[in-house]
Image (cartoon, rainbow, N blue to C red; front, side):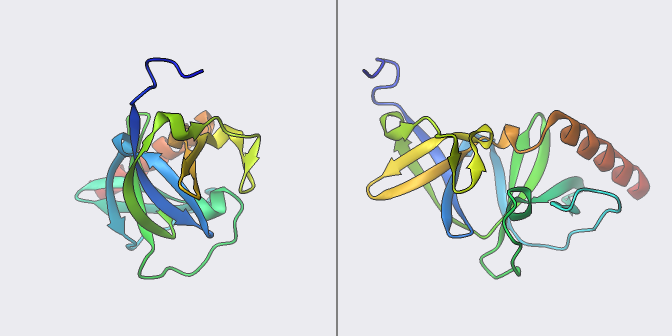
Length: 165
C-alpha cells in the first residue's frame, strides 16, 4: 500500500547511458554537465580515477564510471560527458557514455533495488524506475566511493591544488 507522503510525489533525474544501460541520478546532486575535457593523470591512484581537471579554478577529481563498475572502458566520443556531482560537500566528475535527458518520475514508479542490476551491486543503487517499457537504474552517487576512497581523493585534490598556487 502506498503511503500518503509518496502519492503524487516525483523525483527529477538526469538520465545517462553507460554500456547500453540507462541510469539516473537525482538532479539535486548534479551541479553541471560538461563535455569531456583534458584530465591530468595522477600517479598511484586506482585505475577508475582518471585524474583531475581544473574547472573554473576548482580542481575536480574525475572518475570513470565504466571502470568503477568493472565495465570495459571505451573511446571518448562526441557524446561522452562528465557529470559534476556534489558528494559529501565535494565536487566529483563522473564520466558517462552520454547524458540522454532530464526527466521526472513518480515515486510510485520506483521500486527498491534488487540485489544486482546490470551487474551492479545494490549498494550503489537507490532503486529502479519504471517508465513505460523502460527501466532506469537509479544510482546513489554518495555510495560510488567508499569513505576511504573519498578521503584519499580529498587529499589528492588538496595536494594538486597546492602545487597550482
